[in-house]
Image 1 (tube, rainbow, N blue to C red):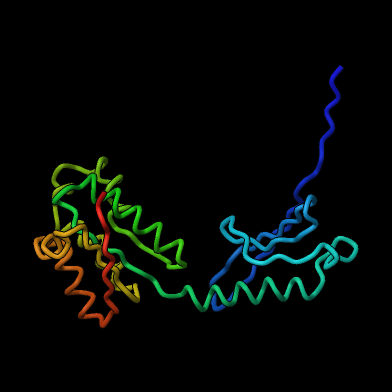
Image 2: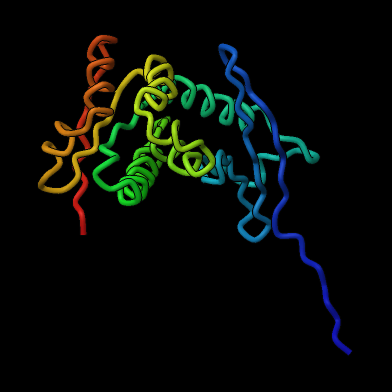
Length: 193
């Protein structure tokens, strides 16, 4: 006869912190195998401290302050919104893949990113043919969000990156609006394999 013994490996506590109307949920996990508490946001470990920080099942003030200070730091560092511009019509499928890769890279570096191609490309399949091909419709979707952003990253794709940007009416309209808004404009060199 096989005996199965259930072993508790993780204990999780969630709490919410709010700063200037922005709310974030922080997850605190106790890893029973390491006896460490880990403060996590978006599944990534940020801060660890020993289990002895617990007293009768509750977090000590030090642990709570550590978590709240981390969240406050995230609020102040990540308030900038980044708009990702990339030429699209030269190769919609390839642009979609590249936009997702670049957006992911920027997010992994702590940026808060809106990637219109990542958002709109899948939606495009459900649009009427008239709207699917209407540049003014898509700019009408994207520019109001661009107006809310603090900075722009423009993707230069391979050796032809600058040429593709110059030929892209969408990128040109986005760059023009970003300049009118006084946004910081950065370039992201993407090397095609």
